[in-house]
Length: 267
Length: 246
Ligand SMILES: Nc1ncnc2c1ncn2[C@@H]1O[C@H](COP(=O)(O)OP(=O)(O)OP(=O)(O)O)[C@@H](O)[C@H]1O
Ligand SMILES: [Mg+2]
Image (cartoon, rainbow over all chains, first blue to last red):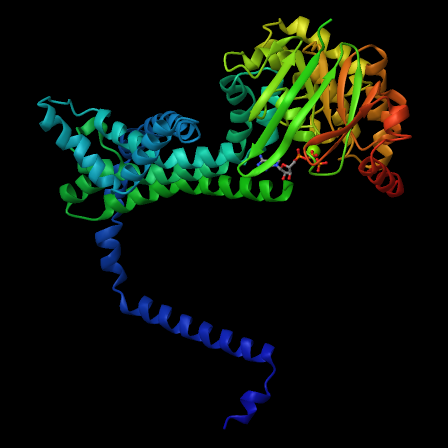
């Protein structure tokens, strides 16, 4: 049939297909750019006076609150995750079982459901009025992050050479002293890249806190953007909120990939 | 006089695998005993039982007369009296050499930083690596790392030292410096139980040599007999193999 095709070398065929895919890509992109009414897009999603309106409060209130939720959730998650990881590694079967159950249950249900349960369900169930501060949101984030971080921390502890624990114990250190002074410092060094990744994921997940009631002063970026959309009947505030997220996440993502490259080189 | 180490009918199994099958021997205070034997004969397991890194299945181990297989013994206190040096050094990689030799002194014995530093530096000096005090372990040669590991154990001022093939992971040209350090220690009167493949070291330094095979002590006596004129065919075969390998 197509003899000329069969006679082409493998390299040429690869080049041919690459050329075809470039052409398809360029045509589709151009069609999209031409089909869209750009004036209207800018008018509904990026209106300059609404952009200007967001500042400086989107940074001073919303971004600040996003960071507060992230830090509270991260610290709470780290503490709980460490306890869960040590329980998972413990000699005692009930401890191991309890931690494993907690981790499976928490990770098996979406974060949004936990936030709604803790923010709305628990106050009703206990008949208490939780003031709408950072409390319920940060608590839900900590409880869920703890379950995820437990596995990262456990992996970090297990990645430390077994000989380190044996050397520490043979010098007369108790298990907990060996953990604190010898194993955990080395484990946390190994955990910096994955923990930074989890920090970034958490930062984005704080947007789910917008689902429970917040007052003006505790609005984080997503809630800020959403309320702005309702208020101005325009999508611009949400777009600006998205850009502020990028401003926060991109430097950290870069930082992690630098760390990972460095770790790969030193291995 | 009570022995430093007295092992009676020691058994150790891993699942169905019986690694130690009734070990009996003693190490007197100040004595240097070398344990030799083929790979897999249970030498490491024996040492690990002596400082309770492994739980013996049955039998008794007396350390200075105290039964450490008794469930009520404080294993941390026992380990404080026994220094151990591993084949793979196991230095603490996140700590400097000086911190390696001081951390247990401070966290276990509660010594002040100044006192721990003084004792640690003296032991680094004794092992000839004091000029490396500020370095991190990774930057040291294997021989230097192993001498730091010995200094680390000595800084706890143990009553006895265990060595598990302390030179097997070293490049041949570095073996001598570590054996030299061990020899010095023996001459200073330290009680030592040394698992080794270095027959020359055993010949020159040991008061007694124990030959182990398949989880039992086959032969136990002065080096002049066990290494030169052994009673058992198994010992002779093993020695021939080791000496040919050199
Ligand atoms: N934790 C363990 N679990 C299961 N089997 C083990 C364990 N530790 C050691 N063994 C087995 O016990 C046997 C004796 O091991 P041991 O390390 O004591 O021998 P060794 O005489 O020190 O040998 P080598 O000269 O190779 O160091 C081996 O067959 C080994 O596979
Ligand atoms: Mg061994």
